[in-house]
Amino acid sequence: MRTNTLFKVAALSGLLLLAGCASKVAAPDQYSGFLKDYSGLKSTTSATGKPTLRWVDPSYNEANYDSIVWNHITYYPAPKPTTQIGQRTLDELLNYTNDKMKNAIGQRKPIVATPGPRSLIFRGAITGVSSQKEGLQFYEVVPVALVVAGTQMATGHRTMDTHLYFEGELIDAKTNKPVMKVVRKGEGKELNNESTPMTFATLKQVVDDMATDATMFDVHKTQ
Image (cartoon, rainbow, N blue to C red; front, top):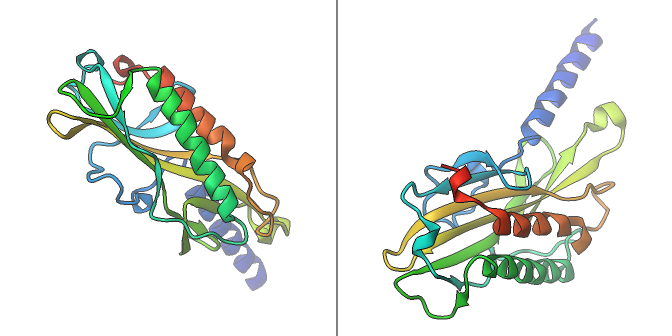
């Protein structure tokens, strides 16, 4: 009887863990600090149907701006390569993200080097989050979250869900105040286990989806 009770408690704990890991948007304790202010962020759906957190200034009017100043996307904080996420993958991912996002944003407004009174300033980062091994205990800062999916107790096999976290904002060059903020948690391909190396291809689709959403974004559908 005692064994059955313990098993039920363990099974319930596993289900609660899975529920916690299944969140489709970033939790406040996963914010990196790259944005100065996270207030006002609301859960919404992107143009491609992906869950995201976003805030848009109610007075924002895209027609008031004629150019965008591009700031190179960085890692924040600086990544620490591991045996699962090597430096080559980190470099390839960052370079691809910059190319795709710059091209997408450039389709909306001309990109300029010097801000004018009708310019927006873009800044963004792939943000540092943590690998989760057991429960919700964070133990190693890396730019990509590896979250255990499934319970080893029930299946005897652990797969790893991969997520790329991104934070970005558009700032009015004249007022130096943000007019839009985004925090995004994108789901990549599943890894077989903790020993499976992550490659650029694991997260490529996440970046592609972000770029498509940047191109298709319609402010009128958010207000």
